[in-house]
Length: 216
Ligand code: URA
Image (cartoon, rainbow, N blue to C red; front, side):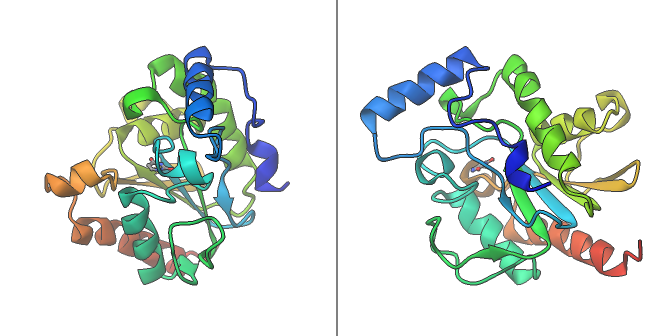
């Protein structure tokens, strides 16, 4: 099943606050995406990267996850460095950046005000995450960027959050999948030293090693 079958419709009505925010920005910036941002990448990839939610002037503007803001600069460069993408990342959806063996999605598909989805919005959007995971038949590893993505992935996989605590560089085996945690690659986290590029690379190095040694 193609990944696109697991995306919400462009006019998804499920979260009233996010629908209102999308409408507000559609009026201010009619040329922006201002709609749920679809997953991007390889349908039969073995790796899924899960972010938080589209950035207002990044993915919400361009329509591609992590495209157009600082978080994407670090993410896509790191994917290129570890062989999870090829081409040139130019922060626009028509650049030549092509994921390899990997797809990228968000725990919440619509841009939330202040970059903060509510608990209800995270729960309401989770079926799309579950469907994305289900649409990837060869999936082996999930990289969860930040605690919100981690928690939503754990619940989407049918596990209890209390049994799987988020931790940078922690790895959780859930069924046939391994979930690799990283602090989110936001500008805030890198500016404050919570996440250095080296710490982010360490996670991708762990995943590279895992995927390369995987014989299933
Ligand atoms: N852009 C995304 O698509 N997701 C994030 O979590 C951050 C920026």
